[in-house]
Structures are given as structure tokens and as C-alpha cells.
Length: 477
Image (cartoon, rainbow, N blue to C red; front, side, top):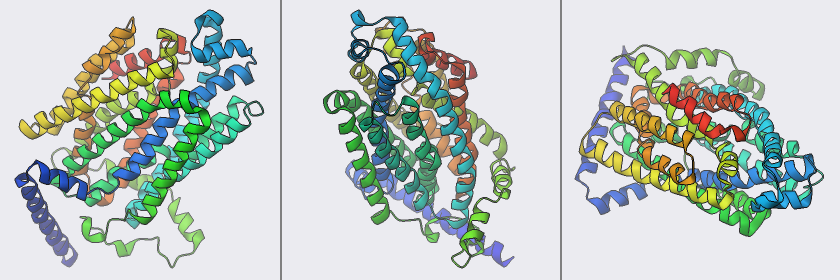
């Protein structure tokens, strides 16, 4: 009874703090709100270093795989491979490009197994560990370190271009990031960290700012990726990426701080944590990989609660799968598909991707301001409208006969980004802060498994795989 009484007092105190902070925010003018946002920046710079570097190097790595496939694995002539790079159709045939891309997409299949299965297993244990120890910072830094190792390994693959086949570059590209969690662990850690550091009513705003920062980072990386690759080549791009990852690690070590117990609203006594400094390393490892954490994570995620909590959690997961799953899967196939469908090079694709990100940024900003701030719409209704936008936009991408119609796709699905913000706001309000890590285990597994199964279905870019991926996802919606 004493513990229950103390927990009740903590919740009442937290509610008062929430209302006070929210009231202060409502009274601020535009300049004061900007100053407030800048003052409360925490994990955003680390995420920016991670995202910009990852997106900036993604197109370069795809071109590395294409060149190795052509020059090393298939041993095609220099004239043909150069023509493929320059998009000079007079010196190569569609069949030759299809062979090169088919080899790359076949490699993508087993890469996808590595990139999805290892993090899915890893996230189960690391999310539970983070909840029990209240330590978010190590989880944030781990994926950045893995990406740094990956980029350094790709530099070695470029240096030994003809000695190392495409498959070696594929392993270097997938293993380090998979073993350290990659995007899955990073996003889980970031949104859990933000939920720990913010009050309930301010959470939608902070998650919105984080998503907009994410959009800006992706747009910045995409806009520069094609142009910088043509100007700087492999060494230039990978050097920039490795420098940014290293800067992110330094920021995380020396500036970022873990949430203190006072900043986290939780009824769990942290002194009962089973991982302590007094335990041996072997004991800590056994505790970390204890299979009971899988059961605990499942129980925490799908437990019953007020206002149909379980049903709302399941529906929210489905919405995020619909919105985020295709977005993750199409990244690996859209560039290859656009090369064949529209004869695009990396600059053409960068321009299109920049337009897509800019449109999404504007749509998300305006829709959140109108729907959430002005009209005070419920988060669930915003998510439903987002799914409808994605539904219509998917058909445009799938069946666009020319680049002009293809460019209409981002305009049609302009508000789909607001859905991910709304659903994340919903689940951070449904799930207790000390359970967020366990909850995000299943959420990330579901999101990341969607593009995995889509990639297994579509093997040839010449079959309009990016359009097919979107068609299947449209049916799911």
C-alpha cells in the first residue's frame, strides 16, 4: 500500500508538471517557441549525423554494387559498363542492364535476410535491457558505431575493387549495421529517449519536430547524393560519411546525457534491476540474453488496459506497417526500377527524391498545423487520412507511364507523413515509459518485416518491382 500510495503521488505530480508545461507552451509567441525548441534539442543532432550519412552513402553503395556486378562478377567490357554508368543506351542493351541488376537484386535477397533477422533478434533483448536499466545512451551510439565500421569496410572494397567481388561488398554493407541494430535500433532508441525526456502533452510536438528533422536530414542527404557522387566519387562520399558518423559518436559521448530517474515517469523501482555493477560479466550476459524477456515483451505489448488498449495498440501497429513498411522496402528497389523504366541516372533520381522529401516535408508541416493545432483532430483520424493518402499515391507510382506522372505521386500522398507522427504520439500515450523499449521491439519487427517479404516476392527490377511493391502495400491498406 505504501508503494502504491507513492506511485499515485508521483503520477499526480507528473500530471501537474505536464499541465504546467503545456500551458506555458500555449502562451508563447512564435519567437519564444523557436527558442524553446532550440533550447530543448537533445538527440536530434545525433540522429541528423546518422540519417544524412546513411542516405548520402546509400546511392553510392548501390552504384558500387552495380559497377562490381558489371566489371567484376559478369566481367563485361569496359565500354558496356561505362555506358551503363553514363546511361548511354547506344552502347548497351536492355538485356545487359537486366543481367547486371538481376545479380544485384539476387544479392539483395540474402542481404535482406541478414539485415532483418539479426536486428529483429537483437532488438528483443536490447529493448528489454534498456527498459530495465533505464540506459538509452549506449543504445543510441551502438548503431552509429556499426555504420562507421560499415563505411570504412566499403572504402576497403573500393580500394581492392577488382580483387573483391560484389558479394564481399554486400557482406560489408549488411553485417556491421545488422550486428549493431542499424536503423531499427536507432529509431527505437530515439523515440524512447524522446518519450523519456518529454511530458505527455508535449510529446506530440517533440515527436513532430523529430520527424520533421528526420525529413530534412533525408532530403539533405538525398539532394546531395547524386551530385556529390558524380563530383567526388566513392572515396569522397565515404570519407564524408565516416567523418559525420565519427562526429555523431563524439556528440553522443560528450554532450548527450541519459534521462535521469526524475525525468522519467515510472512506477518501477530501478533499484530492483537485475543488472548491476556488482554482478560478473557472465551473469550480465546471461541476464541480457534470457529468453524470458521475449515473453515479457509480448505480455507488456498486448496486455489489456483502459479504453480498449490492446485493440488500439494492434490497430496502431498495422497503420505504422502500412505507412513505414513500403517506405523502407521501396528504397532498395526504386532506384534500380527508375533506371530501366525512365533511363534515369543518379542525379535524376536525386532530384526526384529531393522533390519527394520536400513535398512530404511541406505536407507534413501544414497538415499537422491544420489538423492537430487548428482543428484539434484526434490522432487516430489523422492516421486514417494518412493511410488514404498513401493508398491513392501508391497507384500513381505503380502505374505511372512516364516521369511526369511519376512526379505526381509525392503530391498525391502529400499528407502521409503526418500518419507516422500521429501513431507514434498515440502509442507513447498508451504505453508506460518503462515499457516503451519492450513495446518497440514488436513494433520495429513488424515494420522491418514488411519490406523483407516484399523484396522476396520481387526479384527483377525490369518487372517494375517498385510499382509492384506499392501495389501490394496498397492492397494491404
